[in-house]
Length: 171
Image (cartoon, rainbow, N blue to C red; front, side, top):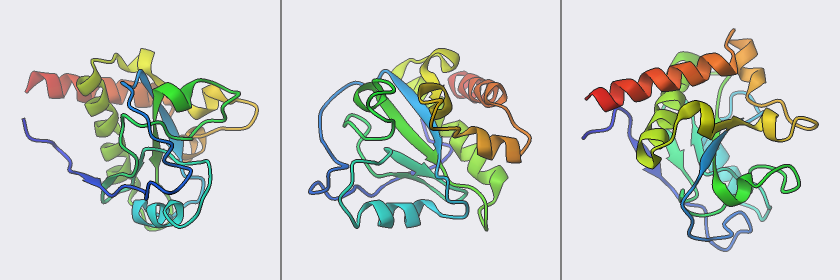
């Protein structure tokens, strides 16, 4: 089956701390936003691939691409360790928005990617997609900032993922 959107793989250098390795089967996914409006997937890749830090999602998505920077089976540092087990078991996916990024296109790719994850891993969206705001509520509000700006809710996002998943399965 062909994909509605292409995924580009451009992996971070393994020498960086943000590539701790591992070989796991992910159990769920976490929605994130970059927090720096207008930054693209490529700009975020360059930033994370230029320094040592214990932070990074698996994927950045903007209006032009879905960019995989850490293999989905590897661990990534995208949620504070004391807040949850997300680094061990979840896929972290960052939405790039604002500036010159076309919201509608970025959002469509973001929804599609989560539906693809659900299909690929046999997940049910409302049980296996979590917000960073849910896992670390004292420190984080993402993805609510981007959603509020565009009159969206997390529930609406989950419904959109479910609809996209149904369309995928129907093909």
